[in-house]
Image 1 (cartoon, rainbow, N blue to C red):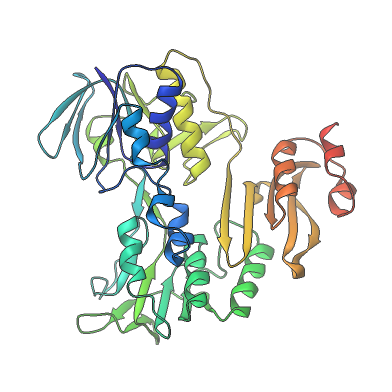
Image 2 (cartoon, rainbow, N blue to C red):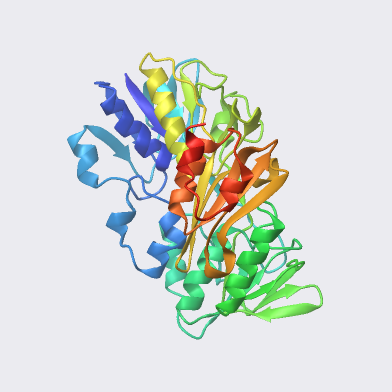
Length: 401
């Protein structure tokens, strides 16, 4: 019998490593539909796209690791069926594999845009190594890139593309970029940052179609159009739940898991972007597209597969690299009713703390790693706003209270 891991992303790679760390001696099988061993997705829109990092540095662990730890990785293989009564999975190659425990870590896929011309050549989505390889082939100086969607992925790509000498237009249907994930002040900060670097940002702009013969040449938005040699669409992620749903596992905006990362099926766990999980610290359920979440859920699931009683309880945190700036976020800014700025936004070194009832509930830190690390420890604790606001004060003094 084996522990079978469906999907080959962050959660899968971490789970396999954690199983060996937990001294699990049975067979471990990772099944992924891409031609790669588990790899990191965040560098794809940043260091890998720019050429700063090669493929080997994108892999979570070197290929030798899996051989040394006796972990089987089946690439270019898709799980077509899960039988929770027989404790088996069946692949698209017709192979049936029995499992002692199953971890579903199928992640998500890009949400596609459904407008006329959406199937023209030159229109790309960004999720996989292959996606970025195809995009990089077309990212040459002087070409016109249109990015549909003003979220973090779109803005990260914009920063790489404009640095490569491309003409860049970002089209966002909402009234501001990053509207669904941050405050008006942070949206304005990033809007100004990108326009100062030469990116053209168009808000309240919805794509109605694409023009071109066989290849895209224009992006149509009602009565206006934007010339385009290349288009990248970044309008969100859809969780990959189909194989779990077909197996009768409970689904609700993701695969429903409990605080042990266990699904509604016996011996079946799930982790990563595909899960809808409870967070007692935030008193609600969440589906997060987040590397730290995927890694931690994988550790929790493994601990419980190995006979432990580990509960998932983490405050979400994220990061985004744009130009020379690193944004680090913890918690959700929308949970706060007051915000305090520490540092100088104009100098691109600052932190914004979000409070509710004088307790920190979230923070955004730009090029301020110390503030970010301390804030992670301060979440939920009462603080003195004057100390937060004073850049000369030592935030460590708040930890002792």
